[in-house]
Image 1 (tube, rainbow, N blue to C red):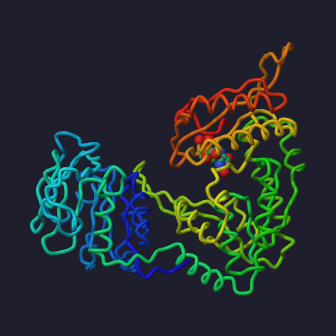
Image 2: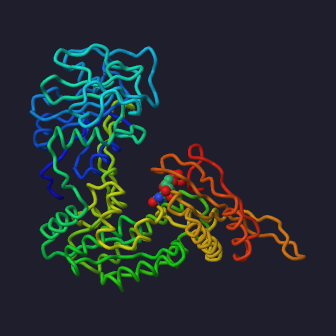
Image 3: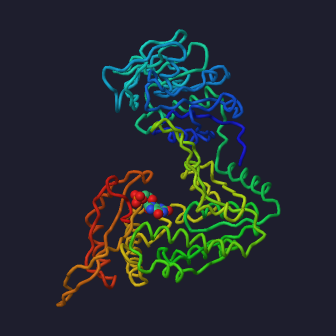
Amino acid sequence: MTTHSEKILILDFGSQTTQLIARRIREQKVYCEIHPYKLPLMAIKALRPSGIVLSGGPKSVYDQDAPMSDPGIFELGIPVLGICYGAQLMTVQFGGRVEKAVKREFGKAYLDIVDPVGIFAGLEAGHPEYQVWMSHGDRVEELPADFVVTARSAHSPQAAIRHRERPFVGVQFHPEVAHTLIGNDILRNFIFGMCRCQPQWTMQSFVDATVAAVRAKVGAGRVICALSGGVDSSVVAALIHRAIGDQLTCIYVDNGLMRSGETESVLRFFREKSGLNVVHVDARDYFLRELTGISDPEVKRKRIGHGFIKIFEEEAKKFGDAKFLAQGTLYPDVIESVSFVGDTVIKSHHNVGGLPELMKLDLIEPLRELFKDEVRNVGLELGLPEEAIYRQPFPGPGLAIRVLGEITAARLAILRQADVIVLEEMKRAGFYRKTWQSFAVLLPIQTVGVMGDERTYEHVIALRCVDSIDAMTADWSRLPYELLGLLSNRIINEVRGVNRVVYDISSKPPSTIEWE
Ligand code: XMP
């Protein structure tokens, strides 16, 4: 939606760290975009990049179906940085040779810089402590004519190379990962020194440009948006409100599956404090009825999803003049990811429940260029409370998939009380922001206990606290025993109907984060 006078283009060859390259570059305040390696030269030219990064990837350049970008990129007059597979491809495209290394190099290595110019400007030749991260099988064996070695490592005599005269550089290691201690220096040298970019991509500039773009697109029209209280929808609402004020109507559907106090805090901040039009739909009874007798997790999800669409549509119809629907789609949802399972390029993009087609609304997705950490920074820029910005992810079906088995108002109430205690103590102990998610789960069994002189037969709460960076994999959080003890004591003492607390020590995979 915004226009960028300067950008770096990343051509993706399927590396797991491609998004990380983009985030590292953007941290330097330079905008960049990821596209599949096959992007045609015409399209590359139309993007007018200031420089190109060729990512790593799982293939070998000599594979029959080795992914190749158009060699015409070397005639565009802009710098190119090849990383790992990207460096090997550059080598081959210029007539050099790549070979399977005798020893696969994986992990830490020390870089011996022999030519401290270009991406190594400002670094020292022969420095003993330039740790870098290697992860490759193949390596550059014979340099193309006109290329020179700029750094070596113990197992890679050509760990970094450059063209003698033209701005093409390649590195065997991964400058984007944290283990490469000089990674930021290298990327900075590339984007500022070689590509001559200016650090202009800031969240302030993003907000200004997006506000202007939303105004231009919407004119005098009305925009509706589903506000859930989560980070993405909160930032969308605040951003669009800044652009068009009262022309925005937010619809908050209380499905009765939220955490304790969520509804009140969303309404307090957005409606009372910030003056947004927020329609509060109390649909608690409706969802409870829809979920009666349902234990199957997937059926729960479907009922909740369909219920949300039905109610949202009914409410939105009351604003018949609305032309636009705002949605919190993020950049990772729109990147065309390169996957070599059958060598297909998968396009992943989801609209929330197909709402826009259903309602014939134009979509506004002001966050579709942003990574999650950038969304948080935009939120801070817009003055959202830190509590809202750094909240842990919360699943759409809410507490319904944490009350295992059948959902009743009473069982929801038990879980909600335990959940409050978990959040309170995790925050107090300073673990809330250290863990990816921390929550209580109500199990569908009862166990025997003893309280005072009496035998009890009551519910069990499982605690689930995990560390993760993207929810794809996760490990159980090693919380201090004292904290676990405190959580258990408080839950058993304060929540009527619970006589046992257990801690989940499973990682993902093979378990999942949620229990349903
Ligand atoms: P799992 O349980 O698959 O969860 O390891 C991964 C992440 O996704 C969240 N999650 C959901 N989010 N609708 C959502 O919006 C869902 O149905 C759903 N199921 C799981 C989960 O909380 C974790 O962050």
